[in-house]
Image 1 (cartoon, rainbow, N blue to C red):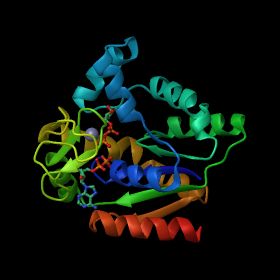
Image 2 (image 1 turned 90 degrees about the horizontal axis):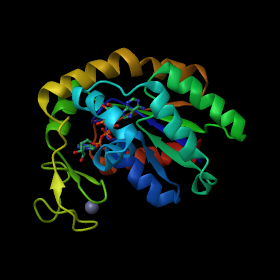
Image 3 (image 1 turned 180 degrees about the vertical axis):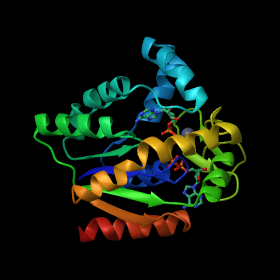
Length: 215
Ligand code: ADP
Ligand code: ADP
Ligand code: ZN
């Protein structure tokens, strides 16, 4: 199953992608996670991406397109993949299409999560992320069993630098300007499923699974 999860920052893409990845044993490919790891390791790519990420703007297309093209060629993607946070521009979507065609693969579904702006801000300001495994939590909506500690791996939780109100507003605007056109792009391609992302995590998950099983 070859999937894309689409939606604004805070919509729940990462949360849902992790569950789908466990359920279907296919990898979650998060360009945000890959870029954050590169920044942490200080690689040339990370050094280039850092200032864009801190400002809440998009990293240049050629950087992320290269990351995803390489990642999709790895053997663990043969049974499927979940793209989380990519594509984010029409140019990225076109490049993805070209890569998939070259590999003889097709997209099965693009799930777009709809969440209101106020809820996005509330989710992102309360988001906490595991330093070790990248799992996301929320101080109110999805708290860990022990405050500040990851349930999955025991790693410590931190607040991402870009999860502060001013940068959040900027990222939401970037989504509206540069990423939201992908909704009609994928609707036109006949692969779009829109889902109400305002419900609790478990209910969104259930709806998503039933949509995937129906398609
Ligand atoms: P994205 O990857 O789309 O940016 P995340 O999956 O990281 O979003 O979710 C953003 C924050 O909102 C996290 O703190 C997460 O725990 C929380 N969250 C995710 N889905 C829901 C939901 N359905 N209801 C309430 N909070 C949610
Ligand atoms: P969120 O889902 O909360 O917006 P991500 O972890 O997906 O956060 O992305 C964090 C940052 O990484 C983005 O604000 C952007 O700077 C960069 N980034 C991630 N994916 C892409 C992409 N596909 N294209 C350009 N920049 C990206
Ligand atoms: Zn962890």
